[in-house]
Amino acid sequence: MQTAFDLIVIGSEPAGRRAAVEAANLGKRTALIERGALGGVSTNTGTVPARTLRAAAMELSGNAFRVRPKITIDDLLWRTQQVIEHEQDAIADELRRSGVRVLEGSASFVGSHTLEVRDGASPYRVRAQRIVIAVGTAPDRPAWVDFDERTVLDTESILGLTELPNRLTVVGGGVVGLEYASMAVALGVHVTVVDAKPRLLGFVDDELVEALQYHLRGLGLVFRLGERVKMVRRHRRGAETLLWSGEKLASDVVLLAGGRHGATRDLDLGAAGLAADERGRIAVDADCRTAQPHIFAVGGVIGSPSLDATSLEQGRLAALAAFDLPVASAGPLPQAVYTVPELAFVGLGERELAGSGVPYVVGTARYRETLRGEIDGDRSGLLKIYVHAKSRSVLGVHIFGTAATELVHVGQAVIAGRLDVDYLTDAVFNVPTFGDAYRIAALTAANRLSDRAGLSAVA
Figure 1: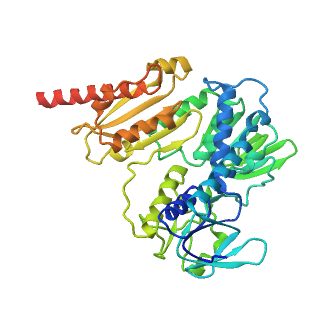
Figure 2: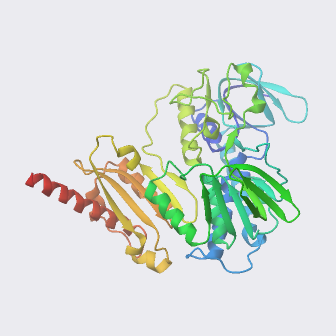
């Protein structure tokens, strides 16, 4: 058996398999070690099943995000396993075609270049000149929570629910918590979201977050922000969430979505001269290089943003940097939150621009201004464009509403192509489409630029 490689990747999360394929396509001897099913958490208990569940919820609730009666878990999950298996097959095929050697088992360091692989039989060792750590993350399970995988769940075990609850408490108003909370309320579940922070999704444009909260409140979701949870305990008829304020929230199911930590516990990083922080995360530089120059870390194990799209790019960068190859910029990376409706953005926003000294204007379009928004019943969506006040270049695009995670790629292409706002004002978008919101927002921004120019001329 081959035991020496140019590069070994630990984990088949999106970042890991991208690194492995990139290296193999460069003609490097590459191996990938995976202790579970191919695709890791992303494919088997995270992104893929969650997005499939969301798609089912959208179909069942309709375009107005309201539910038809008597939805069952079987209605929601009927195609989840099929999608997971399809993705596993696609990953296996990609690795095979690229010439990546897949090693099944758990890996741990026994030196900075050597790994021990345990696959249920006798352990064996493999060696590589370069190593990429892509083990992903695991949900936090605090000691003060009485998990039972039935009533009190984390963001992976929630996929094992056997029936749709009537009342759901979600502890944690981050990305995953809000995604599940918005899906549930769209399906007619009475949902309460508890979060210690007074504001949700601090990395998202304020107006978009406000629009999401307004929409979800309209569906009946209750937000308890600035509230800390003291304890979660089970009882015969469900569970109870005790807040430090003394209030008790009763529900059928409690979902703990308070965070995740890097799955580095079993790697024995110390044997490689590395260490993780208290949340299992590994520090890296801009090239995803760790304190050991030949060891890289990518994906959720290095922390935020921990999204599949950004993780894939990290894998590519790490593979190229590992072999000292130049890296061409991929341009601005889009970010998305798969709530119902969606949030997505690319480029700069008001938080980065405010106080930066960069002159800018904002153009806004409401979905209700588009024919498609009226047809599909999405009157709450909005699209915002940030434009440089002098060069007229598009600096950022931020979207809330139906198809936001698809529409954002138009903004990504405009920014990467260094196109200005006039491209969007003159562009022809099919009607009826949500894409027409770009033209409306661009016209608004262009009018504001004209107003600024007029005021400057007067001055």
